[in-house]
Length: 64
Picture 1: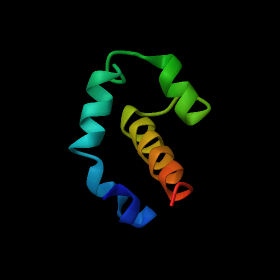
Picture 2: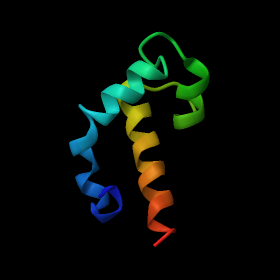
Picture 3: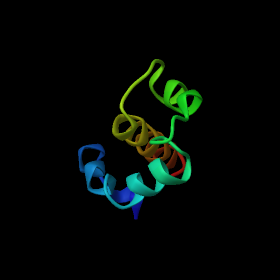
């Protein structure tokens, strides 16, 4: 299902899947290593979770 979405449609995952990523991986609790790994520098947890979602989506595009 994720693979069929266009990149600009991934924002629809911000609240459900994105919230899960932010909570499970502690982005709101100061997991600076993951935030910096996702963004290359410090960024907002919302932005970091979208980077992760886009990376998963991108990986799936190459599997097709």
